Image 1 (cartoon, helix red, strand yellow):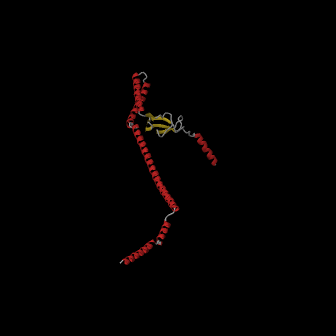
Image 2 (cartoon, one colour):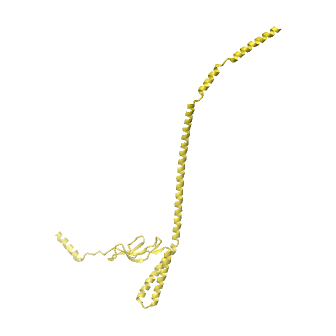
Image 3 (cartoon, helix red, strand yellow):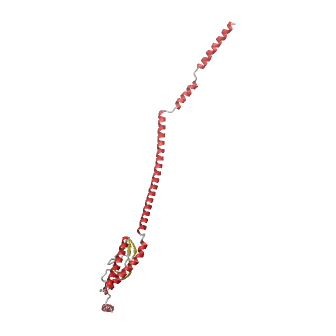
Length: 242
């Protein structure tokens, strides 16, 4: 019985040795896989090249975005500038319209008072003629002075509100301020100048609210040839024909 046990032990020992030898043998396939993995790993140069490509790509994208934003900024800036300019022009136009309306707010009232000035001037001219014919009548002289004073006071009040008479005495004809009633020849007044004023005109500030009615000169009278000169011309013509 003791001998059988020893044999079993020895056999077991040999099997263990064979197993240990079997597991201790290196595997060639594992070495090949490790070499292939090492070959697949990127090098430093490859990584640097990829980084440069990424940098260039990012730079290009940033430049495109910046250009797009710059274009939008310029467009929006121009729009805002146009809007601001339009608003400023509208503001000035409204202010000018308001000033103009305020400036000519009393235009209708003044236009209604101008005929009163005409009546006072007519009364002054009429009383002056009577005073000249009735030199010894103090009442007529006092009346004339009173009418002139009223006329002057009224005209001064209207002047303070921008009304000024158009000066047509011995001046040239201006179609913007004068209305030609008719034209006539004159040896004393040059052509195109005013001979006489029929009705006074007025300006309200710089605007004509009533043109002055005037007589305009057409220049000196043209001398017509006398009958004797005409006969001489006829005789000379008839002689040449013969």
